[in-house]
Length: 169
Image 1 (cartoon, rainbow, N blue to C red):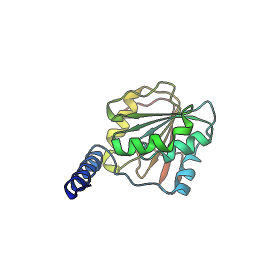
Image 2 (cartoon, helix red, strand yellow):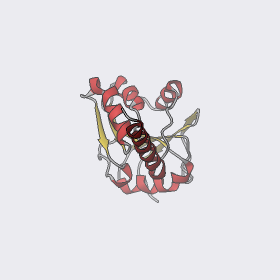
Image 3 (cartoon, one colour):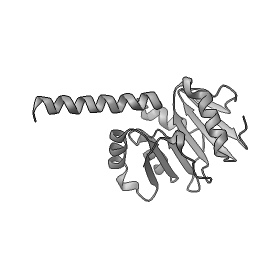
Image 4 (cartoon, rainbow, N blue to C red):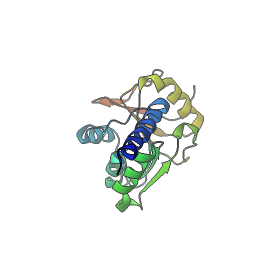
């Protein structure tokens, strides 16, 4: 491999990662212990449909699948999407991953839990996004940020659980 090709690959990776940060949160792997504690805020079972917004490298997807629930991931970064597909290949019966920007997607109406790692700068936008989905009886786990117009039911190590019968803003 020539130096020029290597430099081009590095530039492409930087541009892709930079674009992802502009649209959403940066890729920062969550410590497994913290991720487990965050998901422990809800009791997942085989009837749950969990949506991971910004599913990154697939770590949360695997944790959810291990609990028996079905999980759908949305990831905008093609590098992380591919890594996630590789890491979760054996869970194809419980995990679906979409290479899409979740901000422009309608979530499945049977979604029971949403997990999102995000930034406080996007919290109000995320509240409006949730309200636009029209999903009732929804549990939302935010990691790294709070929803300014709602009070969490439980918290642990930077994760918050919000329970919504119906979202309105």
